[in-house]
Amino acid sequence: MNNKNELKEYDSVDLITDRERYAKADVYKGMQGWICYEKCVDGFSLVNFPCYGDHTDIATISVHDEDLRVIPDWNAHINEAIKTAHEK
Image (tube, rainbow, N blue to C red; front, side, top):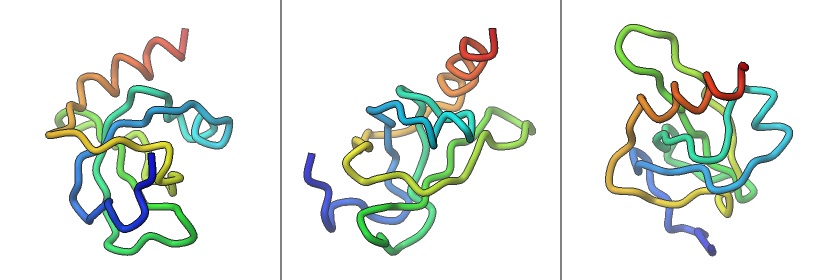
């Protein structure tokens, strides 16, 4: 996917690729979040991967734009389920 200049601040996104550096932040393929900074730097966007309710967010990390897919809306329940599956 060529996301150059396609991603915008507040876009909802889905992570479509697992990478070791994402896993170090407990972020895995299928997790959903939102672009939380208006600028893309060297092909990377700052993405927040939230949890549901009052829980602390999973992470806010730089993600390669090609590893993201724009979606209509994010769902924090999905993130918690994926994180729990990787903790076992």
